Length: 485
Image (tube, rainbow, N blue to C red; front, side, top):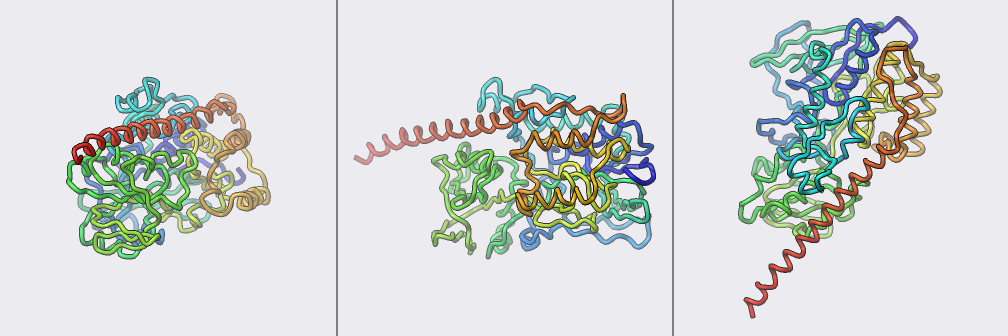
Protein backbone atom coordinates (compact mmCIF):
# COMPACT_ATOMS: atom_id res chain seq x y z
CA UNK A 1 0.00 0.00 0.00
CA UNK A 2 1.42 3.34 -1.07
CA UNK A 3 2.31 6.08 1.39
CA UNK A 4 3.93 6.00 4.81
CA UNK A 5 4.27 2.62 6.53
CA UNK A 6 1.16 1.68 8.48
CA UNK A 7 2.09 0.92 12.07
CA UNK A 8 -1.02 1.82 14.10
CA UNK A 9 -4.28 -0.03 13.39
CA UNK A 10 -7.68 0.23 15.07
CA UNK A 11 -10.15 -2.66 14.91
CA UNK A 12 -13.84 -2.08 15.64
CA UNK A 13 -15.60 -5.10 17.18
CA UNK A 14 -14.69 -8.46 18.73
CA UNK A 15 -17.33 -10.69 17.23
CA UNK A 16 -16.11 -13.45 14.88
CA UNK A 17 -15.03 -10.92 12.23
CA UNK A 18 -13.15 -8.76 14.72
CA UNK A 19 -11.55 -11.74 16.46
CA UNK A 20 -10.05 -13.13 13.27
CA UNK A 21 -9.05 -9.63 12.12
CA UNK A 22 -7.01 -9.15 15.30
CA UNK A 23 -5.33 -12.52 14.81
CA UNK A 24 -4.52 -11.81 11.15
CA UNK A 25 -3.02 -8.43 12.03
CA UNK A 26 -1.00 -9.78 14.95
CA UNK A 27 0.42 -12.65 12.91
CA UNK A 28 1.82 -10.25 10.32
CA UNK A 29 4.28 -9.13 13.04
CA UNK A 30 4.44 -5.73 11.41
CA UNK A 31 2.38 -3.30 13.48
CA UNK A 32 3.52 -1.35 16.51
CA UNK A 33 -0.01 -0.74 17.80
CA UNK A 34 -3.14 -2.83 17.35
CA UNK A 35 -6.04 -1.40 19.35
CA UNK A 36 -9.44 -3.07 19.47
CA UNK A 37 -12.65 -1.39 20.60
CA UNK A 38 -15.70 -3.38 21.65
CA UNK A 39 -18.88 -1.83 23.01
CA UNK A 40 -19.99 -4.99 24.81
CA UNK A 41 -18.43 -6.33 28.01
CA UNK A 42 -16.53 -9.13 26.28
CA UNK A 43 -15.88 -10.91 22.97
CA UNK A 44 -18.51 -12.78 20.96
CA UNK A 45 -20.52 -10.11 19.16
CA UNK A 46 -24.07 -11.26 18.48
CA UNK A 47 -23.22 -14.64 20.09
CA UNK A 48 -23.10 -13.12 23.57
CA UNK A 49 -25.97 -14.39 25.71
CA UNK A 50 -27.76 -11.50 27.39
CA UNK A 51 -29.07 -12.18 30.90
CA UNK A 52 -31.14 -8.98 31.15
CA UNK A 53 -34.61 -8.50 29.70
CA UNK A 54 -34.42 -7.06 26.16
CA UNK A 55 -35.57 -3.45 25.81
CA UNK A 56 -39.05 -2.65 24.57
CA UNK A 57 -39.06 -1.74 20.92
CA UNK A 58 -39.31 2.01 20.32
CA UNK A 59 -39.51 4.58 17.52
CA UNK A 60 -41.04 2.24 14.97
CA UNK A 61 -41.04 5.05 12.39
CA UNK A 62 -37.24 5.32 12.55
CA UNK A 63 -36.84 1.53 12.36
CA UNK A 64 -39.01 1.49 9.23
CA UNK A 65 -37.03 4.34 7.67
CA UNK A 66 -33.70 2.66 8.59
CA UNK A 67 -32.68 5.80 10.52
CA UNK A 68 -32.91 4.46 14.07
CA UNK A 69 -29.21 4.56 14.95
CA UNK A 70 -28.11 8.21 14.67
CA UNK A 71 -24.71 9.41 15.82
CA UNK A 72 -24.39 10.86 19.29
CA UNK A 73 -23.34 14.51 19.66
CA UNK A 74 -19.61 14.70 20.38
CA UNK A 75 -18.47 16.88 23.29
CA UNK A 76 -16.86 20.11 22.09
CA UNK A 77 -13.65 19.41 23.98
CA UNK A 78 -12.02 16.01 24.47
CA UNK A 79 -11.29 14.21 26.67
CA UNK A 80 -14.57 14.78 28.51
CA UNK A 81 -16.89 13.32 31.12
CA UNK A 82 -20.61 13.47 30.33
CA UNK A 83 -23.85 12.17 31.86
CA UNK A 84 -24.54 8.57 30.91
CA UNK A 85 -26.25 8.56 27.51
CA UNK A 86 -29.61 6.81 27.18
CA UNK A 87 -30.12 6.70 23.40
CA UNK A 88 -30.79 3.12 22.20
CA UNK A 89 -27.70 1.69 20.50
CA UNK A 90 -29.08 -1.79 19.78
CA UNK A 91 -26.18 -3.58 21.46
CA UNK A 92 -28.31 -6.45 22.77
CA UNK A 93 -27.76 -9.80 21.06
CA UNK A 94 -30.29 -12.11 19.42
CA UNK A 95 -29.43 -15.20 21.49
CA UNK A 96 -32.06 -17.25 23.33
CA UNK A 97 -31.21 -20.11 25.71
CA UNK A 98 -31.54 -23.02 23.28
CA UNK A 99 -30.41 -21.26 20.07
CA UNK A 100 -28.35 -23.47 17.76
CA UNK A 101 -26.34 -22.59 14.67
CA UNK A 102 -28.24 -23.15 11.44
CA UNK A 103 -25.04 -23.90 9.51
CA UNK A 104 -22.77 -26.94 9.69
CA UNK A 105 -19.71 -26.29 11.87
CA UNK A 106 -17.24 -27.22 9.09
CA UNK A 107 -17.97 -24.26 6.76
CA UNK A 108 -18.26 -21.94 9.77
CA UNK A 109 -14.91 -22.61 11.42
CA UNK A 110 -11.66 -20.82 10.65
CA UNK A 111 -9.09 -22.84 8.72
CA UNK A 112 -6.70 -23.34 11.66
CA UNK A 113 -9.16 -23.42 14.57
CA UNK A 114 -11.77 -26.21 14.54
CA UNK A 115 -15.04 -25.54 16.34
CA UNK A 116 -15.26 -27.92 19.36
CA UNK A 117 -17.33 -31.05 18.75
CA UNK A 118 -19.88 -30.40 21.49
CA UNK A 119 -23.39 -31.55 20.57
CA UNK A 120 -26.42 -30.51 22.60
CA UNK A 121 -29.12 -33.00 23.55
CA UNK A 122 -31.66 -30.92 21.64
CA UNK A 123 -29.58 -31.00 18.45
CA UNK A 124 -28.99 -34.75 18.73
CA UNK A 125 -32.74 -35.31 19.09
CA UNK A 126 -33.49 -33.14 16.08
CA UNK A 127 -30.66 -34.16 13.74
CA UNK A 128 -29.10 -37.38 15.00
CA UNK A 129 -25.93 -38.28 16.94
CA UNK A 130 -23.69 -36.79 14.25
CA UNK A 131 -25.48 -33.42 14.21
CA UNK A 132 -23.19 -30.77 12.69
CA UNK A 133 -24.86 -27.89 14.53
CA UNK A 134 -23.59 -26.26 17.73
CA UNK A 135 -25.34 -24.39 20.51
CA UNK A 136 -24.73 -20.65 20.83
CA UNK A 137 -22.51 -20.93 23.91
CA UNK A 138 -20.11 -23.23 22.08
CA UNK A 139 -19.71 -20.56 19.40
CA UNK A 140 -19.35 -17.83 22.02
CA UNK A 141 -16.57 -19.86 23.70
CA UNK A 142 -14.93 -20.47 20.31
CA UNK A 143 -14.70 -16.74 19.58
CA UNK A 144 -13.52 -16.01 23.11
CA UNK A 145 -10.75 -18.60 22.87
CA UNK A 146 -9.41 -16.97 19.71
CA UNK A 147 -9.43 -13.53 21.31
CA UNK A 148 -7.84 -14.61 24.59
CA UNK A 149 -4.93 -16.58 23.18
CA UNK A 150 -1.54 -14.99 22.65
CA UNK A 151 -2.39 -12.04 24.87
CA UNK A 152 -4.92 -10.47 22.48
CA UNK A 153 -7.11 -9.46 25.43
CA UNK A 154 -4.47 -6.87 26.30
CA UNK A 155 -5.20 -5.11 23.01
CA UNK A 156 -8.93 -4.71 23.65
CA UNK A 157 -10.88 -1.93 25.32
CA UNK A 158 -14.29 -3.33 26.34
CA UNK A 159 -17.43 -1.32 27.13
CA UNK A 160 -16.04 1.17 24.62
CA UNK A 161 -18.10 2.46 21.71
CA UNK A 162 -16.54 3.99 18.62
CA UNK A 163 -18.59 7.15 18.12
CA UNK A 164 -16.73 8.84 15.27
CA UNK A 165 -14.04 7.92 12.75
CA UNK A 166 -12.69 10.74 10.59
CA UNK A 167 -9.60 11.22 8.43
CA UNK A 168 -7.56 14.27 9.44
CA UNK A 169 -4.53 14.69 7.22
CA UNK A 170 -2.82 11.31 7.06
CA UNK A 171 -4.34 10.02 10.31
CA UNK A 172 -7.63 8.48 11.31
CA UNK A 173 -8.99 10.12 14.45
CA UNK A 174 -11.16 7.71 16.42
CA UNK A 175 -13.49 9.24 18.99
CA UNK A 176 -14.33 6.81 21.77
CA UNK A 177 -16.87 6.63 24.60
CA UNK A 178 -16.53 4.30 27.56
CA UNK A 179 -19.65 3.39 29.51
CA UNK A 180 -19.53 4.04 33.21
CA UNK A 181 -22.07 3.26 35.89
CA UNK A 182 -23.16 6.91 36.16
CA UNK A 183 -21.26 8.80 33.45
CA UNK A 184 -19.45 8.32 30.13
CA UNK A 185 -15.81 9.10 29.41
CA UNK A 186 -14.87 10.38 25.95
CA UNK A 187 -11.44 10.58 24.32
CA UNK A 188 -9.63 10.40 20.96
CA UNK A 189 -6.93 8.07 19.66
CA UNK A 190 -5.11 8.31 16.32
CA UNK A 191 -4.26 5.55 13.84
CA UNK A 192 -2.84 4.96 10.40
CA UNK A 193 -5.63 2.55 9.43
CA UNK A 194 -9.01 1.30 10.63
CA UNK A 195 -10.60 -2.12 10.22
CA UNK A 196 -14.38 -2.13 10.61
CA UNK A 197 -15.58 -5.52 11.91
CA UNK A 198 -18.68 -4.39 13.77
CA UNK A 199 -21.21 -6.57 11.94
CA UNK A 200 -24.59 -5.66 10.49
CA UNK A 201 -27.08 -7.71 12.53
CA UNK A 202 -27.77 -5.13 15.22
CA UNK A 203 -30.40 -2.58 14.22
CA UNK A 204 -33.73 -4.31 13.56
CA UNK A 205 -35.83 -3.50 10.53
CA UNK A 206 -39.58 -3.33 11.08
CA UNK A 207 -41.66 -2.40 8.01
CA UNK A 208 -44.08 0.54 8.17
CA UNK A 209 -47.55 -0.66 9.15
CA UNK A 210 -50.45 1.64 9.99
CA UNK A 211 -51.53 1.30 13.62
CA UNK A 212 -48.51 -0.73 14.74
CA UNK A 213 -47.17 1.94 17.08
CA UNK A 214 -50.57 2.27 18.77
CA UNK A 215 -50.75 -1.52 19.16
CA UNK A 216 -47.38 -1.49 20.95
CA UNK A 217 -48.21 1.54 23.07
CA UNK A 218 -51.45 0.01 24.32
CA UNK A 219 -49.70 -3.17 25.42
CA UNK A 220 -45.92 -2.54 25.77
CA UNK A 221 -43.90 -5.54 24.66
CA UNK A 222 -46.55 -6.75 22.23
CA UNK A 223 -44.36 -5.88 19.22
CA UNK A 224 -40.91 -7.44 19.11
CA UNK A 225 -38.20 -8.16 16.57
CA UNK A 226 -36.66 -11.61 16.28
CA UNK A 227 -33.46 -10.28 17.91
CA UNK A 228 -35.50 -9.79 21.10
CA UNK A 229 -37.05 -13.27 21.07
CA UNK A 230 -35.88 -14.99 24.26
CA UNK A 231 -37.48 -18.39 23.84
CA UNK A 232 -40.78 -20.19 23.87
CA UNK A 233 -41.51 -20.02 27.61
CA UNK A 234 -43.26 -16.64 27.43
CA UNK A 235 -45.79 -18.06 24.96
CA UNK A 236 -46.57 -21.38 26.65
CA UNK A 237 -49.39 -22.18 29.01
CA UNK A 238 -51.39 -19.02 28.33
CA UNK A 239 -54.90 -19.84 27.19
CA UNK A 240 -55.74 -18.22 23.86
CA UNK A 241 -52.26 -16.74 23.29
CA UNK A 242 -52.29 -15.59 19.65
CA UNK A 243 -49.00 -14.75 17.93
CA UNK A 244 -48.40 -13.31 14.46
CA UNK A 245 -44.93 -13.93 13.01
CA UNK A 246 -43.98 -11.65 10.11
CA UNK A 247 -41.24 -12.69 7.66
CA UNK A 248 -40.47 -15.56 5.30
CA UNK A 249 -36.78 -16.04 6.05
CA UNK A 250 -34.96 -18.21 8.54
CA UNK A 251 -35.49 -16.25 11.79
CA UNK A 252 -39.24 -16.10 11.25
CA UNK A 253 -39.26 -19.77 10.22
CA UNK A 254 -37.39 -20.85 13.34
CA UNK A 255 -39.65 -18.87 15.68
CA UNK A 256 -42.95 -19.80 14.04
CA UNK A 257 -42.03 -23.50 13.96
CA UNK A 258 -40.71 -23.41 17.54
CA UNK A 259 -43.94 -21.89 18.86
CA UNK A 260 -46.16 -24.23 16.83
CA UNK A 261 -44.19 -27.32 17.86
CA UNK A 262 -43.58 -26.54 21.52
CA UNK A 263 -46.27 -24.21 22.91
CA UNK A 264 -50.02 -23.86 23.17
CA UNK A 265 -49.93 -20.55 21.30
CA UNK A 266 -51.99 -20.09 18.15
CA UNK A 267 -49.42 -19.20 15.48
CA UNK A 268 -50.08 -17.10 12.38
CA UNK A 269 -47.31 -16.60 9.80
CA UNK A 270 -47.29 -13.77 7.27
CA UNK A 271 -45.61 -15.55 4.36
CA UNK A 272 -48.02 -15.75 1.40
CA UNK A 273 -46.63 -13.75 -1.52
CA UNK A 274 -43.19 -13.50 0.06
CA UNK A 275 -40.06 -15.22 -1.22
CA UNK A 276 -38.71 -17.81 1.24
CA UNK A 277 -35.06 -17.96 2.21
CA UNK A 278 -33.04 -19.43 -0.65
CA UNK A 279 -31.13 -21.78 1.64
CA UNK A 280 -33.88 -22.97 4.00
CA UNK A 281 -37.05 -22.84 1.93
CA UNK A 282 -40.54 -22.69 3.44
CA UNK A 283 -40.99 -26.18 4.93
CA UNK A 284 -40.98 -24.82 8.49
CA UNK A 285 -44.19 -22.92 7.76
CA UNK A 286 -45.99 -26.12 6.70
CA UNK A 287 -46.54 -27.16 10.31
CA UNK A 288 -50.28 -27.91 10.71
CA UNK A 289 -50.59 -25.50 13.63
CA UNK A 290 -49.24 -22.58 11.60
CA UNK A 291 -51.88 -20.50 9.79
CA UNK A 292 -50.40 -18.81 6.71
CA UNK A 293 -51.41 -15.33 5.57
CA UNK A 294 -50.46 -12.56 3.10
CA UNK A 295 -48.97 -9.21 4.11
CA UNK A 296 -50.24 -7.04 6.93
CA UNK A 297 -52.22 -4.02 5.79
CA UNK A 298 -52.88 -2.30 9.10
CA UNK A 299 -53.48 -2.92 12.78
CA UNK A 300 -56.42 -1.59 14.78
CA UNK A 301 -56.94 -2.47 18.42
CA UNK A 302 -55.94 -6.12 18.62
CA UNK A 303 -57.04 -6.91 15.06
CA UNK A 304 -54.55 -7.36 12.23
CA UNK A 305 -55.99 -6.59 8.80
CA UNK A 306 -54.45 -8.40 5.81
CA UNK A 307 -53.89 -7.59 2.14
CA UNK A 308 -56.51 -10.14 1.04
CA UNK A 309 -59.15 -8.35 3.16
CA UNK A 310 -58.91 -11.07 5.79
CA UNK A 311 -58.18 -10.35 9.45
CA UNK A 312 -56.73 -11.93 12.58
CA UNK A 313 -58.57 -10.92 15.74
CA UNK A 314 -57.40 -10.94 19.34
CA UNK A 315 -53.69 -10.76 18.54
CA UNK A 316 -51.43 -10.75 21.62
CA UNK A 317 -47.97 -10.44 20.03
CA UNK A 318 -46.51 -9.56 16.63
CA UNK A 319 -42.97 -10.85 16.06
CA UNK A 320 -41.02 -9.41 13.14
CA UNK A 321 -38.36 -11.63 11.55
CA UNK A 322 -37.75 -9.01 8.89
CA UNK A 323 -34.00 -8.57 8.98
CA UNK A 324 -31.68 -5.74 9.92
CA UNK A 325 -30.49 -2.33 8.76
CA UNK A 326 -26.86 -1.56 7.99
CA UNK A 327 -25.81 1.44 10.08
CA UNK A 328 -22.44 3.16 10.37
CA UNK A 329 -23.19 6.19 12.57
CA UNK A 330 -19.49 6.50 13.41
CA UNK A 331 -18.42 6.82 9.76
CA UNK A 332 -20.15 9.87 8.27
CA UNK A 333 -17.84 9.79 5.25
CA UNK A 334 -19.01 6.30 4.26
CA UNK A 335 -22.58 6.14 2.94
CA UNK A 336 -24.96 3.22 3.36
CA UNK A 337 -27.13 2.77 0.28
CA UNK A 338 -29.89 0.20 -0.26
CA UNK A 339 -28.79 -1.53 2.95
CA UNK A 340 -25.24 -2.09 1.71
CA UNK A 341 -21.96 -0.18 1.86
CA UNK A 342 -20.99 0.96 -1.65
CA UNK A 343 -17.42 1.52 -2.72
CA UNK A 344 -15.93 -1.63 -1.15
CA UNK A 345 -13.65 -3.54 -3.49
CA UNK A 346 -14.17 -7.27 -2.95
CA UNK A 347 -16.40 -6.22 -0.01
CA UNK A 348 -13.23 -5.33 1.92
CA UNK A 349 -11.33 -2.25 0.72
CA UNK A 350 -12.89 1.20 0.72
CA UNK A 351 -11.76 2.42 -2.66
CA UNK A 352 -11.65 6.11 -1.73
CA UNK A 353 -9.04 5.34 0.95
CA UNK A 354 -7.64 1.79 1.23
CA UNK A 355 -6.50 2.44 4.81
CA UNK A 356 -10.15 1.84 5.74
CA UNK A 357 -11.11 -1.81 5.41
CA UNK A 358 -14.11 -3.96 6.27
CA UNK A 359 -14.31 -7.55 7.50
CA UNK A 360 -17.75 -9.15 7.41
CA UNK A 361 -19.52 -6.85 4.93
CA UNK A 362 -21.12 -9.78 3.09
CA UNK A 363 -24.38 -11.67 3.10
CA UNK A 364 -24.83 -15.01 4.82
CA UNK A 365 -22.81 -17.89 3.47
CA UNK A 366 -19.69 -19.73 4.72
CA UNK A 367 -19.36 -17.38 7.65
CA UNK A 368 -17.18 -17.25 9.71
CA UNK A 369 -14.71 -18.74 7.26
CA UNK A 370 -15.17 -15.96 4.73
CA UNK A 371 -14.20 -13.46 7.45
CA UNK A 372 -10.79 -15.13 7.71
CA UNK A 373 -10.03 -14.62 4.01
CA UNK A 374 -11.10 -10.97 4.23
CA UNK A 375 -9.09 -10.42 7.42
CA UNK A 376 -5.92 -11.86 5.92
CA UNK A 377 -6.29 -9.69 2.83
CA UNK A 378 -6.80 -6.60 5.03
CA UNK A 379 -3.79 -7.45 7.21
CA UNK A 380 -1.50 -8.13 4.23
CA UNK A 381 -2.49 -4.91 2.52
CA UNK A 382 -1.86 -2.84 5.65
CA UNK A 383 1.48 -4.59 6.21
CA UNK A 384 2.50 -3.70 2.64
CA UNK A 385 2.72 -7.37 1.62
CA UNK A 386 -0.12 -7.37 -0.90
CA UNK A 387 -1.14 -5.01 -3.66
CA UNK A 388 -4.42 -3.86 -5.14
CA UNK A 389 -5.35 -3.39 -8.79
CA UNK A 390 -5.77 0.14 -10.11
CA UNK A 391 -8.63 2.30 -8.87
CA UNK A 392 -10.19 2.04 -12.32
CA UNK A 393 -10.11 -1.75 -12.16
CA UNK A 394 -11.66 -1.78 -8.67
CA UNK A 395 -14.42 0.61 -9.74
CA UNK A 396 -15.09 -1.54 -12.80
CA UNK A 397 -15.45 -4.60 -10.53
CA UNK A 398 -18.19 -2.85 -8.54
CA UNK A 399 -19.92 -1.52 -11.65
CA UNK A 400 -19.98 -4.97 -13.26
CA UNK A 401 -21.30 -6.53 -10.04
CA UNK A 402 -24.09 -3.97 -9.76
CA UNK A 403 -25.05 -4.70 -13.37
CA UNK A 404 -25.16 -8.42 -12.64
CA UNK A 405 -26.71 -8.43 -9.15
CA UNK A 406 -28.28 -5.04 -8.58
CA UNK A 407 -27.47 -2.30 -6.11
CA UNK A 408 -29.02 -3.93 -3.06
CA UNK A 409 -28.58 -6.88 -0.73
CA UNK A 410 -27.81 -9.32 -3.56
CA UNK A 411 -24.67 -7.32 -4.33
CA UNK A 412 -23.13 -8.53 -1.05
CA UNK A 413 -24.34 -12.12 -1.33
CA UNK A 414 -21.45 -14.43 -2.24
CA UNK A 415 -23.66 -17.42 -3.15
CA UNK A 416 -23.27 -19.26 -5.49
CA UNK A 417 -19.77 -18.08 -6.44
CA UNK A 418 -18.00 -19.19 -3.27
CA UNK A 419 -14.92 -20.72 -4.87
CA UNK A 420 -14.39 -17.76 -7.20
CA UNK A 421 -14.57 -15.29 -4.32
CA UNK A 422 -12.39 -17.25 -1.88
CA UNK A 423 -9.71 -17.85 -4.50
CA UNK A 424 -9.79 -14.24 -5.72
CA UNK A 425 -9.23 -12.97 -2.19
CA UNK A 426 -6.55 -15.60 -1.52
CA UNK A 427 -4.61 -14.58 -4.63
CA UNK A 428 -4.93 -10.90 -3.77
CA UNK A 429 -3.58 -11.60 -0.27
CA UNK A 430 -0.73 -13.68 -1.63
CA UNK A 431 1.72 -15.66 0.46
CA UNK A 432 2.95 -12.65 2.38
CA UNK A 433 6.38 -12.65 3.93
CA UNK A 434 7.96 -15.94 4.92
CA UNK A 435 7.11 -17.02 8.46
CA UNK A 436 4.65 -14.20 8.99
CA UNK A 437 0.90 -13.99 8.67
CA UNK A 438 -1.89 -16.53 8.40
CA UNK A 439 -1.67 -18.78 5.33
CA UNK A 440 -4.91 -19.33 3.47
CA UNK A 441 -5.54 -22.84 2.11
CA UNK A 442 -6.85 -23.52 -1.37
CA UNK A 443 -10.64 -23.50 -1.49
CA UNK A 444 -12.18 -26.85 -0.55
CA UNK A 445 -15.47 -27.83 -2.28
CA UNK A 446 -16.31 -29.91 0.80
CA UNK A 447 -17.07 -26.65 2.64
CA UNK A 448 -19.91 -25.84 0.26
CA UNK A 449 -21.18 -29.42 0.31
CA UNK A 450 -21.33 -29.38 4.12
CA UNK A 451 -22.97 -25.95 4.01
CA UNK A 452 -25.72 -27.11 1.65
CA UNK A 453 -26.12 -30.53 3.31
CA UNK A 454 -26.72 -28.78 6.62
CA UNK A 455 -29.61 -26.86 5.09
CA UNK A 456 -31.05 -30.09 3.68
CA UNK A 457 -30.78 -31.63 7.13
CA UNK A 458 -32.79 -28.83 8.72
CA UNK A 459 -35.44 -28.96 6.01
CA UNK A 460 -35.70 -32.73 6.48
CA UNK A 461 -36.16 -32.22 10.23
CA UNK A 462 -38.98 -29.74 9.65
CA UNK A 463 -40.66 -32.06 7.14
CA UNK A 464 -40.41 -35.06 9.49
CA UNK A 465 -41.83 -33.14 12.43
CA UNK A 466 -44.58 -31.60 10.33
CA UNK A 467 -45.64 -35.07 9.18
CA UNK A 468 -45.66 -36.29 12.79
CA UNK A 469 -47.70 -33.28 13.89
CA UNK A 470 -50.30 -33.85 11.18
CA UNK A 471 -50.58 -37.52 12.15
CA UNK A 472 -50.99 -36.58 15.82
CA UNK A 473 -53.74 -34.09 15.01
CA UNK A 474 -55.54 -36.65 12.86
CA UNK A 475 -55.34 -39.24 15.63
CA UNK A 476 -56.63 -36.69 18.13
CA UNK A 477 -59.56 -35.72 15.91
CA UNK A 478 -60.84 -39.31 15.50
CA UNK A 479 -61.98 -39.85 19.12
CA UNK A 480 -63.37 -36.32 19.18
CA UNK A 481 -65.46 -37.09 16.11
CA UNK A 482 -66.65 -40.36 17.65
CA UNK A 483 -67.69 -38.61 20.84
CA UNK A 484 -70.03 -36.40 18.85
CA UNK A 485 -71.80 -39.40 17.28
